[in-house]
Image (cartoon, rainbow, N blue to C red; front, side):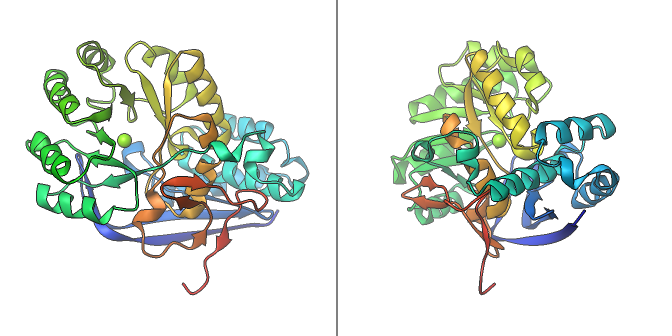
Length: 337
Ligand code: MG
C-alpha cells in the first residue's frame, strides 16, 4: 500500500481569534496520500486531536488497509471504527483520500459520485474573527467580495460589535458565540441581535448543556445552530428538540461518509444543516464543498484565511461555491508556492 503523509503549516492572513481561544498566527494540517487519493485533517485540540495524534492514528490504521478492498469505503471506515476509537480528524483524512481515490478511479467528481447537482452549491459565509469593534469593522470592509458574514462573538462588547458592523454593511450576518454565553445572557443578547438583522446564531452556550440550548431556542426567534454540541449522526436525536439546526464539520464527524449520514439524519428530524470547516487548505474545503448541494448554509472559508494554500480547488463566484469538474475532490497543487 502506497501511503505518504505530511504536516503542513498554514500561515494565516490575519491572526484569528474566537471566544475561547487566543490569537493564532498559523495552523497545522495533516495530509495523506493513499493509493493515489488525497485527504487532509485539520485537527482541533478542542476535540482532543493534534497533527501528532493524527499521525499516530494513521500508523495504527495503515497496516490493515488493503488496496483491493479500498473501493468499499463503507466497509473500510466501519473496520477503522471498530479498531480505533475517537480520532475523527484522522478518520476524516482517510475517508477523504478514499473518496478522492474512488472518484479518480471512476473519472468523475465527487458530486457526481453522489448524484448531486453542482449548480446547487451554496454561498459561503466569510468569518470575521473576534477583535476590537473597530478592527472587526476594518476586516468587514476588507471582506467586500463576500456576500454573507459570520461574526465571532462572546465578549462583553457583543452588541457594540454588531452595531458597529451594521453601520457599515447590510449583508446577512450569522453570529457564532462559540459556547461563550450563559443561557439567560444568550436570550438577552439574541433578542437584541435580532434587531440588527442577524440571521442565525451558532452555539450560544456550553456544549454539554442541552437544557440551556433548549431554553435559548424556546425564548428567541432566530434559528439556533449547534456546533460544539454536535459531532456525529448518533448525537442528533438527543439534540433535535433543543436546536433548529446543526453545523457539520468533517474533522468532527470523521469524514464525508458520516457527514452525508448526518445530513440525512438531521433532515429526518426536521433540522437545518450548515456545513462548516476549520482553518484548512483548499483540499479539505473543496471536499466539504462537494456536499453543499445537500445543505442550507455553507461556512467554508478556511482556505480564504490562509496565505500559503498548497492547493487550488473550489472557487467562488460572488461568494457562491463553484466546484471543480476534475475527478475526485478535484484539487491540484498550487504552482508558484
Ligand atoms: Mg462554530
